[in-house]
Every structure is written in C-alpha cells, then in structure tokens.
Image (cartoon, rainbow, N blue to C red; front, side, top):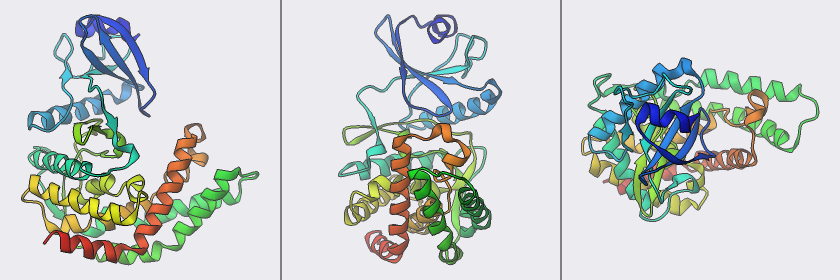
Length: 336
C-alpha cells in the first residue's frame, strides 16, 4: 500500500520499499526512489490520531526552520503535511543514511554534540507561539502519589497472578523495591527549586536522536506541542540508563560536558534547570512503572530487548538515587 500511495500522493516513484523494524505507534519504511533519492515513510496505525500527528509534524517543521537538525518533510501534492486520502495515512521525510540511534549509550565527543543539539532545540522551541517559557514549581515534574498508586496496583496484580515467569518474578521484586523508596523520592522532589517549563520535543529518548559518527545528524519523532519541564527532557537523553551503566565516572563527566554544551548553545539556560537534571532523571525512572508493568498491561509488547532495558533502567535508577548528592556537587563545580 505504501508503494501504491507514493506516486499518487507525493509524485515519488518507488524502486524499493523496505520495512524498518522500529517504531511502536507507526510502521516505518525506507523508500528508494527510481531517481535514487532516499525517503523515510511513516505510516500511522490509527486514522483517528491524524490531527495529533499533524500537530507533531508542524512542530518538527517549525524546529527545522530554526536551523535545528531535523529531517526535511516532503508535503503531498496538495501541500498537506500528512497524507490522509490514500489507503494509508502517512508522512514522508528525507532519509538520513549512515546513521545510528543513541540507544547504545553516549560516549566521547557525542556527549557535547548531543548537548549542543538539545540546547539549539530548546532555544528554538522557546519561541514557539503555543507557550512561552515560564517557571513552574519543581515538585510539579512528577505526580508521585499517582505513580505510587500505580506501583501498588502492579505489586497487587503480580501477587495475584499464578505461574509468574522469570522476568515477571524479577519485575514483581523490582516494583516492591521501587515502592520502598517513594518516601525518599518525595523529599528529593520537595527540595527542587522552580524550574523552566516550555514547549519541548516531547519524546527525546535515545531512539529519536540519530548520530552520524560523533555528530547529531537528526532529531526525529516529535510529539504535539506541549509545555513540559526542560530538565525532564534533558534527563531523557542525559540520564539514559545505558549511558549511565557504561560507568559512573564516565557518565558523570559526560553529562557535565552535555550540560556545558547545552548552555553554550542556549546562553539563557538557567543553572537551576541544568543542576536538576540528575534529580529529575532519577525520579522519572524510579517513579515510572514502565516497563515493569508491560507483562500485565501489554504482554504482546514484551521482547528480550525490553526485558534487558527494564533491568538496566532499574539498576541505573537505584545507583543514581544513592549518588545524587555526588552527582549534583560534581555538576555544580563543572558549571561554574
């Protein structure tokens, strides 16, 4: 259906269309056109979400227009951002060859490259007309009572489920461990100062940062414009568990370089937001039931790689909680 839609909707004559085994809410394809150009086709699973997807595409275009590394969108024949008239709803983007995601963890010069890219991203999004940057209470970065209730549900559900497999047994234990630290998280959260809230990318996780060598080639998969805490979004990539588990000292020095590069790219960045990054990242990981609850809520989504990620996230988050004071002191010194 993708091959049939491309000539009609985009005037692109495909020579080859190959499924890319990635994406949760979309089906993704690499398109090689007869003229040799490469495209990335994103097919949406639900037509009812098209308005939301269009808003996300608009945000990506706005960001690219500000000089941020975002792939170029190809509009339809009618000039639409998203194709909705054909057999499948989709959008079409320039394909970025010879890239890899940041999922393996950040190392070396990639730390500063990602920091610069995120700083430029946030500087541009700070000008988005949907919402200007404002200060919000730091405690608003996480709904701890709501998350605690979700963990209690998970623990109860695992306790009443017969015949737990190996991962489920581990997930049940991990959920109980998380519940036990909510008191500490509440104290850490209450101590946060006011933090910056603005329009952000919305899902700046490692799969959505494309690297070519030691440079950022592109930032992809934007969400619709929605104000959030900048410290939360920086933490999504800066406190990725796979980077943290490459070694504490290497991670801490790398995060310091990321934050310094972010500040260079966005000179109006507030020090309080940067210093809050490890705290917000720690709370976000520990207070989230994902992916511990996936065997209960979406067993069809469970894969070996997701199980590995769950264990890594749990270990990294607990390590960070024990060393939060050290992390903040080191970052405070590096940002002076």
